[in-house]
Image 1 (tube, rainbow, N blue to C red):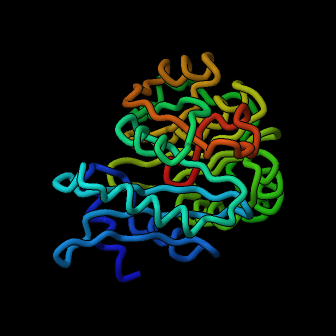
Image 2: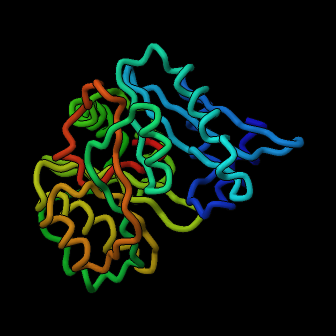
Length: 268
């Protein structure tokens, strides 16, 4: 836990959104962890990993802007992959600048995503329609059971922590649910899981409409043009692309078509 301030400094230097609570997930989840690269007594790079059953996720690849291009990222990836040598599937989300590095480690593109941001204006969402309600603690066991099928692994500890951190962002419908969390620059809305675009819209509308003035980011797979069009219609603007990658030969877990927004590149 004493290394969290160093991780946060790297986040701020790169303009990333994570808070201390996000870093704690990597250090408290069973089988998970991370590595710091140091130079002259200061942290100049980081990488973390999470284990969801036999599925592993690599994240928080950060290198001090003044140290980029010196091989620190390569060293960190070597350490992360060594720690995950028994994982049956390893994934990550790559920025355009990081994609080349991951390709050198036999990661291949699976599908594209984009980050969308907006300051909530309730009038753009209109009156919430469709059946959705605020999630309560009694709903969690059923939601977590359903999520194992959609995500392809057990991430119940993560989702339960999101429910505690931002209960106002946790909503449930007959065929979907959503969570969220605070961040340094904006709130992150996700995952948004739904059986169809209408349900996803209903969940996000019910969540966002009461939160006027709050700035949200949504990281959306680029799989459903209707969904992307609706996000833009309610004020979300595309900020940057990134790509989901898996190690060559690994079988992708879960059902991406039901995941209208991911939890974030740090958590998958």
